[in-house]
Image (tube, rainbow, N blue to C red):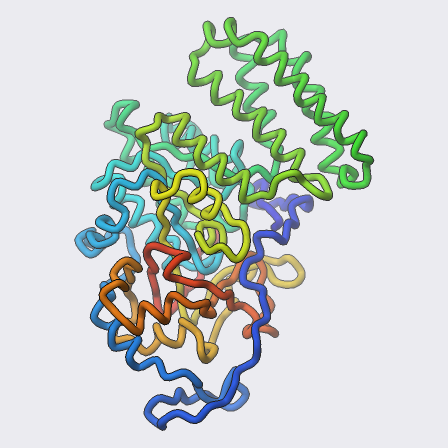
Length: 459
């Protein structure tokens, strides 16, 4: 995706379509007769003339299981979230998804859930689908009060998070930390590696503070390869040339590690370990910039998510903010959630999000940010159609509760189409933004809001 370097400048490098989720065109609708009271009425020209699977028994069971939500605002009572807390239990890694990269209700609800997990389940960190080095600026604000929340969020380089809703989360984290000791504070980290811009800034700052003579020994090798990548010349190089540049990053890291004793003595073990991770992220970025990287983005994001917990202490509980398509445990394609489950098993759980209609922000076909994208109809024979028929417009469903049902358990244990929109949206093809999930296996909890309103970009 294109990334926001500052409120007014885009970086053309990052057009990685791997985050564009849900752009799968599924089979067209069949037509089967159902009783008149089971048909949905659609206006002329809509996706399907009628629904074609009788889900009445599924809906009846779901109406007995869902937990209604008054809204998404973080200021609402936390009592409504107790069942989610019970589903999460002592799980130390919890993925928080979203059905678009620009739905206000999903952003607010994730903020609300994080506050609940911090105050009731001992969570101490938020990990973001954002540049690792850029997120350190947010953490610096959250922990130390340096800079402003708005400027720090801009350093993460993702237009998706440059919103009032994310700013509210960051401001809450800062306020929460004001009267807390270091071991009680909450922390903010990124787990994405697709920038390479900010990591050298942190390494240079650290070296200037602790051993300035090392700057000229370490930084030139790093900046040389980053300049080549930024100029879009990297993929045209031979493997031998790319390997030579990668060796330059490795050489810089070797020098850094060779001076570990003096660097730790003049700073701290924690500060040194943080900068050592910066080299690791740069190597991930170099790999990700190749035509055929050794490892995929989600694999690295899972690794970096686990690092957050290791860095802060093995007992640390971390929430992970990303798109549904990253946090899912569904095995139809490799995801961050799938890698985490394979690595830590039951120590990872997740919460997926859905909506039926409404507006959201996304990039259009010309890479322009549009806050007026809108889904106006529900495609028939989808999970969204079932959710639309339930008694409560806004609710959540704990998937473990399906064991007490027959029809709903069977329904969600099969691959079903769910509305899922990533970074791009083409309003001419609204029917294509559905992704097939086995929801019983993909998520531990589903949070649903009937109507999406667009997240509000910061100005």
